[in-house]
Length: 101
Image (cartoon, rainbow, N blue to C red; front, side):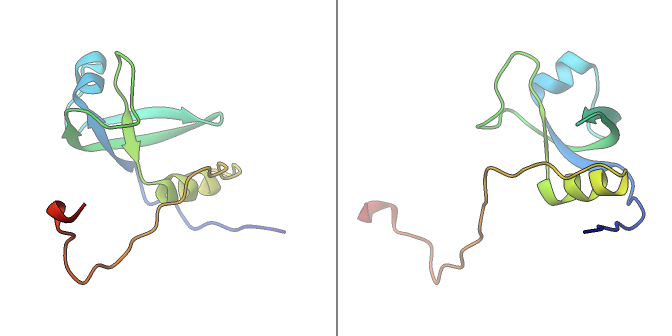
């Protein structure tokens, strides 16, 4: 099977934790390079969060959209990363009542 990817759309947008910004000396708007599976990819920090549930460690981290990352890897000629988590959107007619649990 041959997979063809389109042209790169530029840096991958990312959300940075406050710890990442402090430890890397970067800020919202900075473009950094990150290596994923041996491929160096540009990443643009577009927002900041104090913390993120799955990001631990004193250096903080970057959060990116998996589909955007996969497209960037394919465009660079690399295989996509295996996915161990699938998140699905669900439409609710109304927000759940917190008192009903």
